[in-house]
Length: 160
Image (cartoon, rainbow, N blue to C red):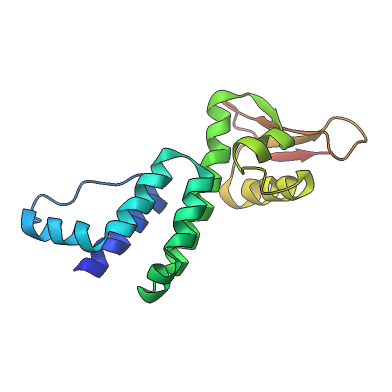
């Protein structure tokens, strides 16, 4: 049951981006045991919800042997990918358009250069149906902009 709790925490992060309350039929004693034995998973969840990439990445690195021993490393890596996707999507809640350099800084913690960020955005657009346009503002390859398409039923696009 403890293994199920650990996977439940990770799957809730993947699906909902947060933790869900445990079923009401879970006894308090069992829940206390699950939380005690699943403390690294709860810490990972708390860090994910905080929205800080560096802390999440550090938490994943610190718990690397735990994730591997529990055979949950694949799910934890998916949690990292989900965090990045969510961070880019959340930029659309604040900005109508943002430079790819700002996307890298704000959502990806400068872990990618502009070209890598563009490739990531293109992949995100293609895989997730992300409604954006990627626009190159000049001949300079480092001046592209991500425009979020809200309230439009148009297909995602990449404009060069």
